[in-house]
Length: 456
Image 1 (tube, one colour):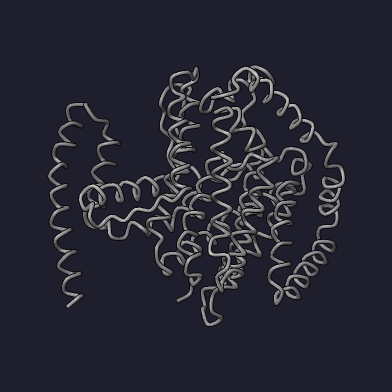
Image 2 (cartoon, one colour):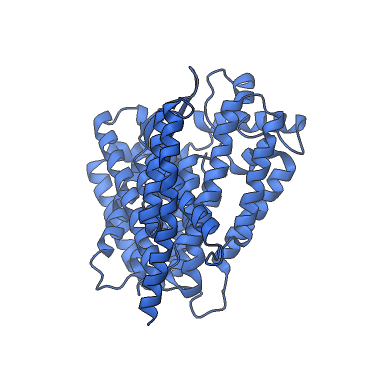
């Protein structure tokens, strides 16, 4: 009886959705009169068709977003002669799944049970602040870039919180995350061997790029995703054949993060792994054996490379990147003195740094709290800090339950420790690929933590 009702409801919803197809002729007529660009008309038509027939599976696109982000930019749209808008496959998945969820909520409000939580509301307030800065920004290209990060962060969290609601969906999401980590790691290996131990690996890490971005950013992504994948592997039943994918992703990522020589990424990853070592007592022997084996192989086959890594760590306060960060921080405080309460606006930091530091300056501040302070002033920093507190409270939720030390809970806490430390001295939370993956993961954990069962 229940199955018949479900089928009947599905058929009714499909019948109602088909009315959307009546809009297709209008879209192409507008395109024919040059009122709508052909590419945009085709994109809207394709979205409506997909929505009518496949909206019940929009959650699948959410599980594929990490892999789409890892593949990098696939579309370049020329806005002006100097402004090219880049779109990745992950962003397309994000837009399509968000559009489907919006239309479902619009057409079937009684069936919508949307979750926001404190994290979602704070992200929304932060997004509104970013949008409101439109009235006093000077560079609108940079404004759009800054607003894009805030928008995608909110959408990533919102989609994961409302669509990754079952153990099956959560498992597929983490497998998608594992696939993204494997792809980024393999790309790092190819880059490493093509450069043949070049000194640029040590001195020009921000200039070496793979499709998702600079290898310094990739190292930061791996630092927080690897603890999640390791605890995901441990949480799965031993009879699960697919769990080997999570372990393989962890091993490849473990090697890649050491090859990239990122001091902050290594220290934050070390903090996360140290936390796992303390909390996961039955796994300590395996941890020690794996690290010793890795160290032995690295010493035998990559001795010169390992020496370079040790040199970077021992001269952490003297190298050029550290001195450049100090200059960045001084410039940030100079800007804050001019705009202490509401900041200079979304994305405008780059324009100020190009004026104060160098005309070819092209990266965000290597500190998330300074980035928030410069962009949106003391008010923005307060909201951002409340957001961080809410995220850590998520990991501590139901701390007195029998599952307080479960694998997935420990994995989230380890990842958050890596995020908190790494973001103090690196561009992380406000970089688009990092923001999308991080907020997707946090949104997914809303459903992981209450049940603590992902393999059922």
